[in-house]
Length: 79
Image (tube, rainbow, N blue to C red; front, side):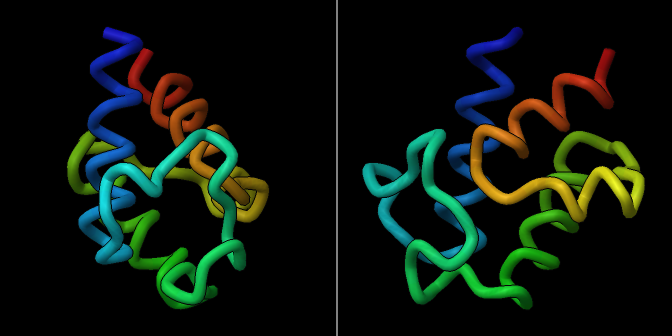
């Protein structure tokens, strides 16, 4: 399930930001690319919540700054 979550988050990031999947890595973070600004970050959080049917706490969402953090959030909220 872990690899599945990671792959799903990668796809969500690529689709939401409109970037090639090859550009998405665990280290890709808000501000690293022009497509990932604060507005895109909110859209990304919404897409992840919708895809995994979870509701991420606002404080947890504020701490999420890169793809690794989003994968970790999904794993924590889908236990």
